Image (cartoon, rainbow, N blue to C red; front, side, top):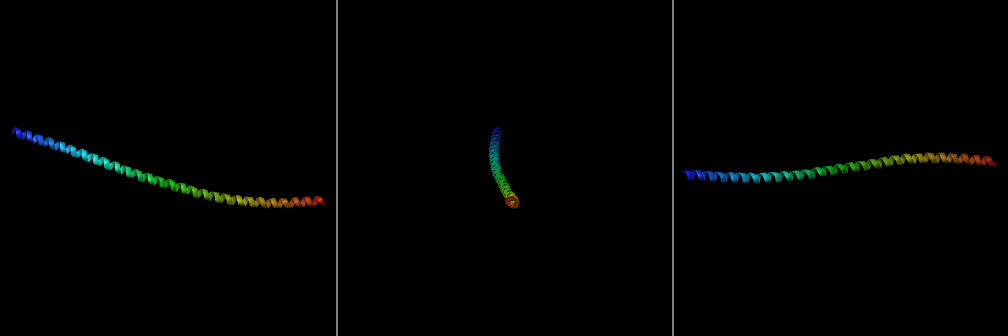
Length: 102
């Protein structure tokens, strides 16, 4: 009977070691899976961030081009007005000089 009890204790200890060993293996697998998922999520988040940055950069570029075009149109208009004013002043100067000469 003592031998039976010792045998049961040995089997129980062996089973306990196996349970702990299996738990360690499962724990490692869970941690490895979690690390893999975390890396995938990190890669996805970084890709989204890069996409958003590129979208913002493209939007800023388009807005910059639009602003540049608008400003160029304004400048062209101002140049035309200055040219017209210069022509008028030139005509006045020619008239004044001609009147002074006669």
